[in-house]
Image 1 (cartoon, helix red, strand yellow):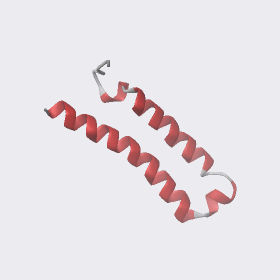
Image 2: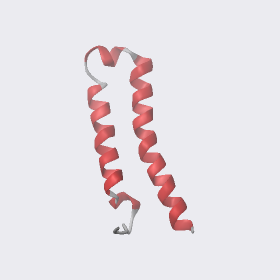
Image 3: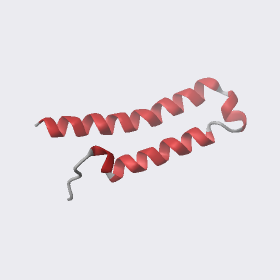
Image 4: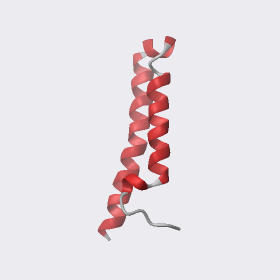
Length: 63
């Protein structure tokens, strides 16, 4: 297991960013874009993944 110097360097965070970008792109098209509730919920969930990773990493570095 390798340790990242910064949480931004974590592979899991990079993949979460890719997921978030994909969700934003896909939810900006067609009928998905017009279903505001679902679109916004999906976007918030994707951003939440990244936030949780950052929060968890912060907890680990405080120990």
